[in-house]
Image (cartoon, rainbow over all chains, first blue to last red; front, side):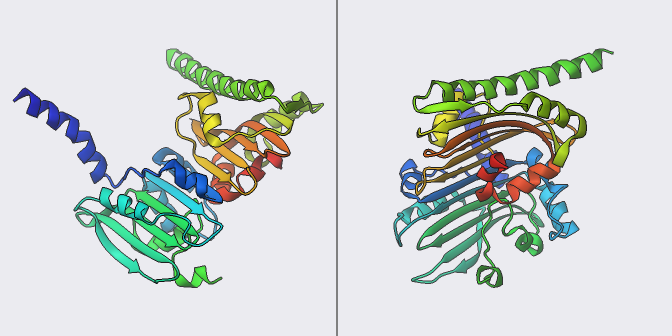
Length: 173
Length: 154
């Protein structure tokens, strides 16, 4: 009984962690070593609330309000010199971390170009987290946005905080 | 009175720990063979001016510039600081050029943030910068993290 109690206590933080929309993105060191350029961004809630006050004028007020309510933005981006230089199984590892509470809402697949997957974690009427996996032949980007996300305003975050452009028009610019 | 004293002590502790981090990085650069510090005359006066007029949102700064060839990666900088500064806010690394930029940041008070930045070019120069900036300056720098290494060179 005591063991069960201790196991529950140990498991609780992991469950709470998974439900608040944050995922642990474990990237092997070999990936960063292979990458021509890598960018890691770790912005927690306090930092975002401060930065949100001063975000560029291009971003409308509601989008700023959304950023202010977020608990974190975590971006890992890797750029490679040649096609297929990274092992795509890393994406499976990230997907494996998304429990059943995560739902895939967008899939863009192309055999030769970019593949984009967007997952969200619904929490009642709101979304408590979002994961974007963008895999191009020479670029891999993993984004985890934690906190209440307004999907209508999500596009306004593209290009900010290291988040890649995912909408078509902006990518072709 | 005791509340003010408490705030002052916390602020002093925060600042002293940031000074310590800056100094730890500078000492590590000094100890690195191949690097030598470039002394810039008038920095003390410039700091005084910054304290008074806060140009482009900067409230305070300390800077150390090193020239020469040496190779560090972002993990080296994290090792130097130990666990005192936690996860860097931004890390940019280029294997093409060997350039590394790492930014740590923490709130100080109100809209002010303290940033500790290292921009390292293995074939040219290494800049260690500690600065207290307002949120606007911070937002500008993190809106495009790939440009982070330019911060120190400006």
